[in-house]
Length: 208
Image (cartoon, rainbow, N blue to C red; front, top):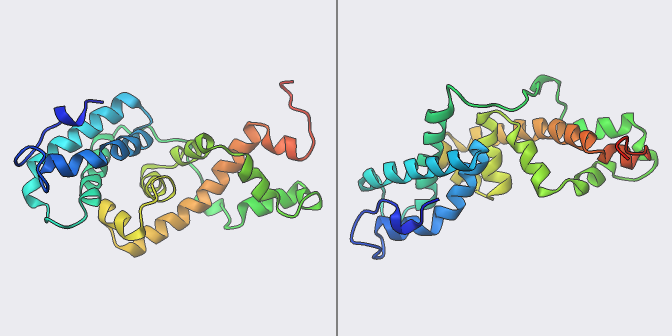
């Protein structure tokens, strides 16, 4: 990605309160978010560049003293929706109606894992690396991937996510609630695929 110095700037250079001064501290995080949205380094770079250009052009609409990070990430997220809505590469569709709130608990009970340990679901989660969790979040459709990325990976508050996505806080809570259900199903599928579940129940890895 281009350095902050080559990105469009508004105002007098990088003086306090100028576009450049406000943009530079959020660029790295913005690129990380764009990468999780698009799952492509090239696309992420293009997305950040496009968002920076649009933000520069619309900087006059930013209210000084308000949350620039949320303001810029809303532009970034809108760019993502606009650019990839028609040709987005969605991950595996997860059937929300079939995903119980206690999905992981029910699956571990079905395998008899509770006879071996007090909290097998926690053991499964402990063995999932950050990369695998990102993979699970990446499998969600756009609507849920965005809020899950901002909340679980970037630690945005509900209010900040609401500002970024442009919906009420209640809608953010609802989407995150549903995303949690779907993530349980996705994480369990990944754990089974990577042999984590087999390891817990003592079945030798077929690849060995």
